[in-house]
Image (cartoon, rainbow, N blue to C red):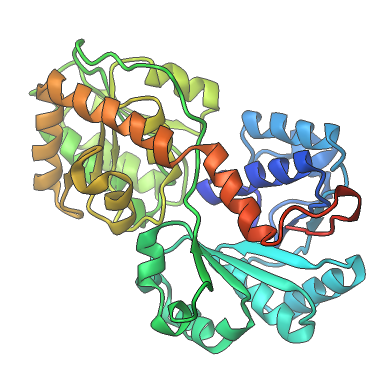
Length: 382
């Protein structure tokens, strides 16, 4: 269960997991709180919030027999007793034995549903550093954590940030990192870099403003460098206004949401990827850039530090500091040897530790601790 099927890292992870479970023959259902109606499997034109590549995956869901594998609770986007009760009724009437959920609103709705009807296994995927949650959500976590059968943290950083009340129970918290398709492509490290790329939702926590300001400082030193901002969100207008007053403003492009194919065409050009977030759990966008062997620059937010191996597999700057970001980008842009080192090492890092296949194996162990059920009797719904 997830908040909605809008474009985002968690949504992409869950769609991939749904398709994986369907391929195993598991009776899996995707539940959303809001955002889409049941049209999503019958009228793809209505799914303006999904990327074309995701729509293709939904077609695949239909082909493997999950045409009815979706249920929308039609909530208002907030935690409510009404939505929780509706979820509890659906779980009971459908015979669901396991609910796997992520994102704060969905998690809290699932916890309240278990108060109404507790006869199912609840697995909670935590993707957020605990201190970054609003106070009221942390209070709910502490009060209702006993209802959770299994916590799944997307990184060691997320797991370590969770309260000791949750972590001290042996086996109750498992770490399941995100996974991406591994690539055999090689980036062009010898040619001058033409693109500085960031992929993120345009929200405050992603700190796209830092990237724009850093590019302004670097624009004269690297006159052929373009800044490509890929994503959408609530701060788009403000960020465009900021970009207009920067040096080199004509080389700052807001590209919106791109398909995987469009993004790959950019990654085939000499590019450097930057992720400036103040907080991350296990950033998919960073993993995908590393899979394409792009040299990556990231803030020292715990989830980014973990993926980049404290600077072994990518360059690290002090989060929130434009000066630190400018200095690190200058080093990466100036040195083809350094770009080659962190680009190749980063790609090997993903192939070894963050592959989609490894993610699915870990998911299977969590959902089916006693082994995969007989397919004709499978009743695990996620």
